[in-house]
Amino acid sequence: MATETIDCPECGATIESLDEMDAEEVPEIETRSRGGIGYGEATRNLYLCKSCRKPLGIGRRGNE
Ligand SMILES: [Zn+2]
Image 1 (cartoon, rainbow, N blue to C red):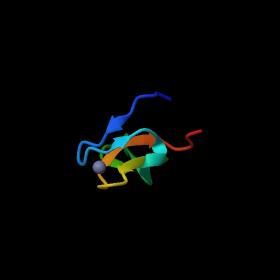
Image 2: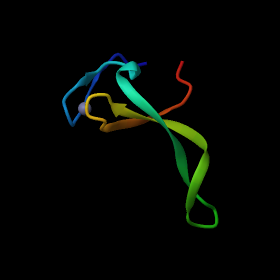
Image 3: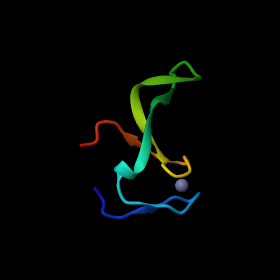
Image 4: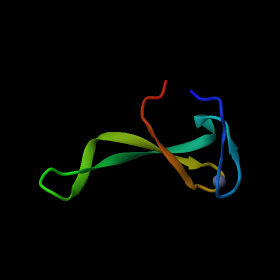
């Protein structure tokens, strides 16, 4: 993984690793072939700032 850090745009907390964020599992949304949208097969992790709970990004599950 990258060695760079990210700063929370909400509270300014510096986050250096996934361990410093809270993760919630969220289903993937996909477009249906017949039109409309629905839940896909995949589940992703939504990462939240531990300090202010701002969503910071989506990651794949099963990070080694
Ligand atoms: Zn924050």
